[in-house]
Image (spheres, rainbow, N blue to C red):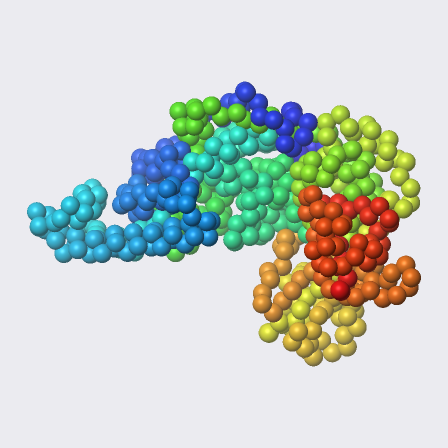
Length: 549
């Protein structure tokens, strides 16, 4: 994490207006970031992806030779006419048809390769496309290698605008580590500067850390996921890239390792006897070193080229002003909403400045621990500290709220397997559930899993483990507090038991009356089930218990 005394220079709130000025593109040092001849066609291809082709265009191209584009499919007309679901299916079908079509042509051209005068127009175009490849089987070798790459022009334009919110502080962080500032443009490739980006393989945030890498460089536990914090994750990315460079000795290799893994790149160099990225591209045949890894450095070069020539590609780009904030530090266990109130920020501003906290913390089920650095709007640190000093015992605490994760026993589960999955001792799970014979777990049984040590009362939380346990059909995981042992029933002021049918997460603009009407219950019943007073104040993100009607 960046030092607390280094506030970011710029705008007062996360959604600050765009500035007419632009953040200057990072200078390129071609000694540090060489443009290998073998990669020039790849860089040219990715430059088109980032700057020319729309999100509603798909380039059907060879994975062996990315710049060999068989067909550019254009769906911009359909995008105006079809629903999102219809358009997605239409695109997928058209891309599949195009790949099948090029495979048929490749087989036909292979048969006619020695008689090009007998080829029709389409066959001749494919024949000429591979004229520079010196192999008699070049056409058959290309069968099954074509893929569809959708354009990123719109997303890149938005990324360049959004990047202004973060780049000044990102450059400051990389500067403190004495790293090339050009590296701060890697999120153009990784996430398009979308702080909420989350991939299908579980990578999150601007820098798209996967859990296994994240746990080395930042906090990742039941309370926080620092991957979602653009400033903290930038500090982690700087250290990650620094370590990659120290191990591999060049920035092309270090950047490729950021995608492929440091150990995998080192292994590839050993197996090929190589010393540079072109050696891996030419001779490393490992299945894991696929299209994404081979092209990652070329994508990075292309993205930096597009940023440097932004006006040529996009016209006037109005980058947002950088976010400005001050930092304070907690000294006790404090509810998240109390911290938000002390800095006089609305929900959205406070969340964008402190995006790492998990829903259980935001919703008040767990407290923000002591020693946590909190960002507050610029100029409000002193007022925050004065108000914090006046907090009573009902709003700051000496211990964390007790909580468990719930694990539904699935097929093949054992106590040891469950303990390893959550990173806690078997004895702790046995104790929490009063288990005498751990070998007699039942399919469907719900076990309470205590938190890992780093999430229990103590100073700063240190991260290990995954952000979210993987959900399967037979497993459900939920964070719960000891105070609410069951969401199935709560006590009403009259001492009666109120059955709870479901939970509702409050969205922006919703009122208690609207929510009551939706679930066909009275406002009074809703207030009673949730311990709300007559005013019935609710906040965005709050979980309301809906009584059974």
